[in-house]
Image (cartoon, rainbow, N blue to C red):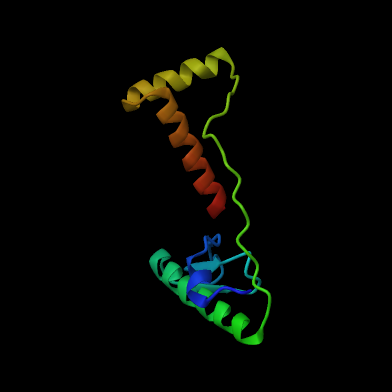
Length: 122
């Protein structure tokens, strides 16, 4: 038995948003709902448009009697990993963290996040 539109809208489908390098703005899609994508000039607009696109996609699938996939279970991560680094790098990172007034864990998280963001844009 299929769910109602309201029930499908509440399911945790994964929303992906990526920068649109060619046109500017952002492209938003729900990978589990094949072909469900939209765009927006800002992140907020892309998210709002994605909700509208998801609703329209689900309405059309329900009207056509199509099978609607359930959201895929997200992997669970602990938020921790161990990393061995050279002593000289450890010293440099500790010194930079101290200069910034933060713990080495916070500083490394900052560096990883910044690099990941640059990777997403690049």
